[in-house]
Amino acid sequence: MTLSEYLVQYLYKKGITHIFELTGGMVANFLNAFYQFEKIKVVTMHHEQAVSFATDGFARISNLPGVAFATSGPGAINLLTGIGNCYFDSVPAIFITGQVNSYEQKGDRNVRQFGFQETDILSMAKPICKAVFEVKSALEFPAIIEEAFKVALSGRPGPVLIDVPMNFQKVEITEIDFSEPKVELIEKKYLSDINWGLLNEKLNSSKRPLILAGRGIQVSASKNLLINFAEKNGIPIVTSLHALDVIPYNHPLRVGFIGTYGNRWSNILIGESDLIIVLGSRLDIRQTGANVDFFSNRTIFHIDIDSNEINNRIKNCYAIVEDINIFLTNALEKVNIIPTTNWDSWYDEINASKVKYPDDKETDNVMGINPNSFMHLLSRHSDKAGAFLADVGNHQMWCAQSLELNMDQYFLSSGGMGAMGYCLPAAIGACFALNKPVVSISGDGGFQLNIQELQTIVRNRLPIKIVVINNKSLGMIRQFQESYFDCNYQSSIWGYSCPDFEKVANSYNIKAKTISEIDEIEDGLVELWSNPYEPFLLQVMIDTHINCYPKIAFGKPLTEMEPISKPIEL
Image (cartoon, rainbow, N blue to C red; front, side):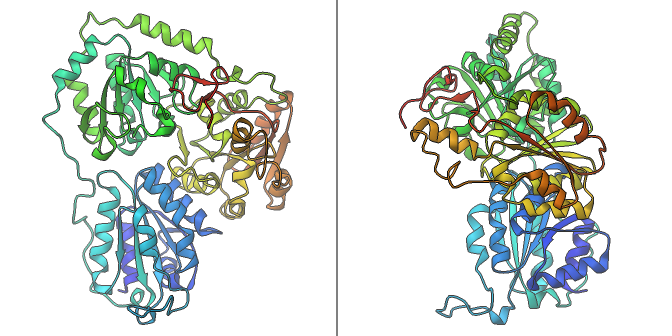
């Protein structure tokens, strides 16, 4: 069989059901092999960045590597934002780029380019990949693809890139039996030297403990273990942005979302806690704020598979380098709260704080639709949704503050990269992985970055419910300019514009509706879900000048948030 045919059958044996691509000359052999094989769904997108985001969305749901193809030169380069997104957010993915024929490459020649569209994508991608592979011979490809799978999935997951010259793609290679994996795909270890006695001692002497859950919970497939561990020991849970979906919204031990735009009560309670068990969260600046001094007066156990993320920004943590699934499996047996431990007053404080600082009252004098209130209502109407996805901007934070997720629903967003334009193509990947309706929530700015993928939704008849929160501005930047640039709204309002997205949707033959008043919300949401199995776009018009609160006051600790606290000068 040819290298291309080998790759297609290898992916099938590994359980890959979908690949995402935008065609080009240097990947034509691969796509022809997929066409002839027929057993893997080929999803054609309209921009390579969208290919990479859809690959990311598919992988987050399936916990298998997403697989993407793009041609050489501009095609490969356009993947880079999504590759970086996978790298920063620990998403396993295999990106395969076609390269010009090996005999057309510049090699040691002192020229910028020899073959048409020849581009050194490996050097560009290397800093944001777990590994990059240059195929120098067709016969070495089976070993490379096997290693790529292993690297993408083992340890802390992430992306790999394989660059394959076109002339190698059609070379006949020796058929290899790959009915069983040659290597263990996920290498796990159990560190027997964990000091369970110390963890028990500190927990039992604690008065106000918390668990901080991060994306490592979903990456390690540990959601049920987390809830069992928390319930057994009665420990309340706060979450990072990427862990909104690890505990149901109405669970009695769920506290809320923390961080720069976290629920005010959650940030306050982090400040009141005396012990934090951090599970699979890297404690980045968006979670802790810039001022981390106040973390020093509490006990922190930090469990993560990546040792580089522990005692990084926040020092003096008890470090446990471990797979979260293995840690929680053992913790269920080895962590025991003594009967005399009583945290009733801590639970009362948590509940009182939630009542005192409701999320939909953070912004006063809202004209028209309150975004936080809308998110609550959207959640209650969207029980059929398998996932909610948020783009990047103020709407992303309103989602994190106020969406009410149930046990079976996922939440996906771009975290470390913070890439506008992520949501719509990622929703395509998630919808294919789940085979259920999903909700895509974008701002008017981010939606325009990959708006062309509406055609992908239509062509594949995907039941994606598209919500566009339209404030006719780039709201997060506008709010920043309001605070620090004397309301000079260059490029966020001045010089920026957007179309009527209802008309745009209709031009793609997608049904749509626009709402702008409170009394229109109910009818809008009913219409959004009138047919759960077809796409629909709901445009939600909100006040251009509504701010996203609460927000950490710049230079202040996590507990001091606008508008109650004021930021220091930039």
